[in-house]
Amino acid sequence: MAQPAVTAPGDEKSDRPPVPGLVDRFGRVATDLRVSLTDRCNLRCGYCMPAEGLVWLPKESVLTDDEVVRLIGIAVTRLGVTEIRFTGGEPLLRPGLVDIVTRVARLEPRPQLSLTTNGIGLDRLAPALRAAGLDRVNVSLDTLRPDRFVALARRDRLDAVLAGLHAADAAGLRPVKLNAVLMRGVNDDEAPELLDFALRHGYELRFIEQMPLDAQHAWRRDAMVTADEILAQLRAVYTLEPDPRHRGAAPAETWLVQGHSTSDGRPARVGVIASVTQPFCGACDRTRLTADGQVRNCLFAQEETDLRGLLRSGADDETIAEAWRGAMWAKRAGHGIDDPTFLQPVRPMSAIGG
Image (cartoon, rainbow, N blue to C red; front, side):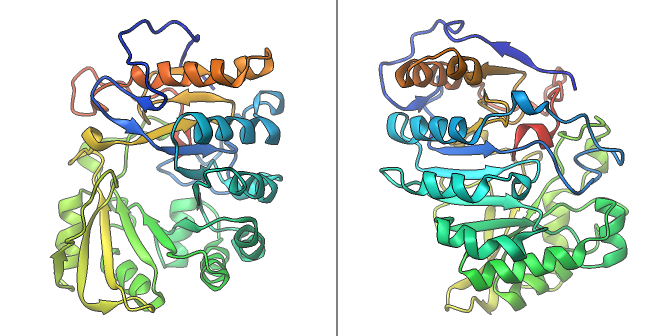
């Protein structure tokens, strides 16, 4: 797998203010850290990777459990990070996942902890993850039809995903959120069906516009199912009202589903993450750490900053924190998908982390 450009600590010279947090030139502050625990996955979703899979990162390049916990600790105690999202690849494939969650949950101040997963294996791990300190999960569910699941994910595992959802809810990993990507000609008519499922079970559904993050670089904007198309499908069946809550830095724009509520009495909501047609870069509060220890200041960044090298060369925590600050200061104003010069990242989503 080709690698993006790596920025060495100290390469970024700027007038960055002497503040402890992860600020950038546009006044944004990163408080949400996405940590990829592995680039490996047990599905082969077409919007992410080819049927034959990818060349995985060599084991020696992947951060150890101790290195993951140390970097998260630096982010929380020195850089102002308050939310941690464990991602992949498929993070449930990480052997040390429960121990990592346990150790991160003990940090002071304690961050909010969530996990993005395809749900396979969650039926076994949900109770242990909840006991370890995980607060909630996001589970990818693009279809409720077994034949379509096989077409999308190239694996017959829908039953395993549904079992994982039910186990997460039973373990108290709430709110259980669903992430759905609609693919034209495959599942693009399924928005109302997915919302009905979410409402019946008390889950929160988020539709995500397909982004140019596939390993095949086959994404085309004109083939993408847009937020407007998704909302038109939903409004043909449901009455949606604007959500009065302040959106803040949340990637999803949400609506109240009139006449529906959750099991605990809260208004039922549905959201759309319109990363392509309605980008929300101006409010972005995220920073990303790849499984091999690289900081990415944007999903679509062309450069990375190597923290693994610093760790393994004996750097102290403040040196690592300062390199992280420099990486975030260099963040661009937006992802630039609409710019004619836009280049898709070298790494696919499975290697970046969601």
